[in-house]
Length: 337
Image (cartoon, rainbow, N blue to C red):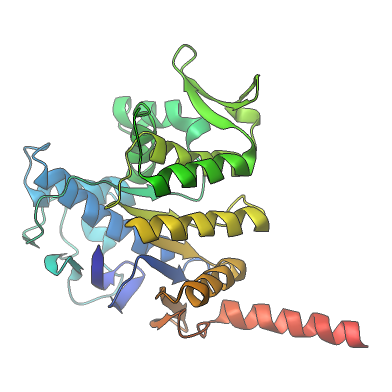
């Protein structure tokens, strides 16, 4: 798994260092603090490593990375990712299973990254990014806009996920934790989401009834995405999953159940990075850390700097937490009047 990271002058992330990462890691902050930016930076690095080391690509690692950054962040030139007003280069460092991956480039960089070091061995497992919005009802539009029209709009996190979901389900025995998690996911919404090859569309199947994916609840579609990736074996016990706003479109009970499932999958080997601004998500992860006695590292944005903590040691000091506690105290005060 990813052990530690360091980013400097990477868009809104002017100076970020996060060591001693765990199986579940939480990025906490308000809007426009750089949470999604961080997840996309990590995802771009992992996908570069996976695509290059498999030999699927004839391009060099630096060419794959430049292309990945270009289509993930959708800047006219990747040099635009360098922090505005920064004097130095953008730099990215990551340690994966104690092996290093790093690169740097300046503002005038277009599509060629001259400085890149990769000491990570070949890797057959997949990383995936689950965006806040679901992709099932948009998959044909995403594929056309990117594969045929080559247009900005849907970035590589959407394209990669759409392609991963189209892989056929695998028969045979799956990991017990994966099978159990799939059963819990499907029990959450009382049915299955399946791809219909005839119509070329996704549909929700509940008993003998079938419903178009367009009229299916957002929460069901979001849960179904994780279920599908476990079903078709795109994810295995060495995968890394990046989830942006796991709370999006889910009611509190479903969020709690989803995080319980994530904890089980993490115990089996999958590493998770979650970006959230939900007090409910933080509190649930805190309870999981206390219950299981496991480390859940947190990096949180506060007053324009990033601070690290661990939910095993307590709730982090963050404006989101402070505001939630203030509202609770205000409610209690009104009740006692």
